[in-house]
Image (cartoon, rainbow, N blue to C red; front, side, top):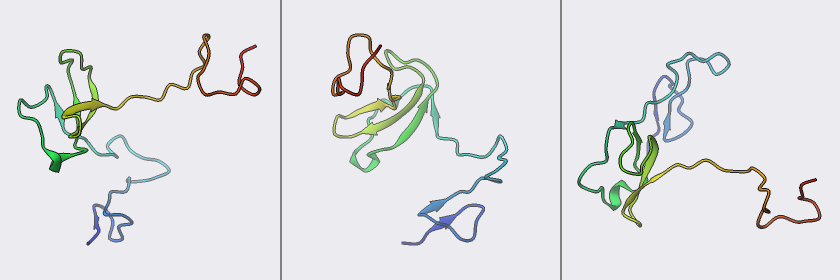
Length: 102
């Protein structure tokens, strides 16, 4: 399978889009994911598994943010941040010997 480069003649992946300067990027370096005000009335299919969009407005209980199509659950799922904060009521899976609050 050929590799494609935008702004490079030596792509290092299937699609390679380097920043204008890695050390001092400009405000237009990056990619713009398709933005939508609502999800389509027709669901994507298995061939769109993993498709990414940015929801610009609150729709029902879906807040603005990045969503990907999960065909297994036939739904748009949000990217959720990793919560690594300590809980005052305990943290499941931690060792009380090395992970504790004082």
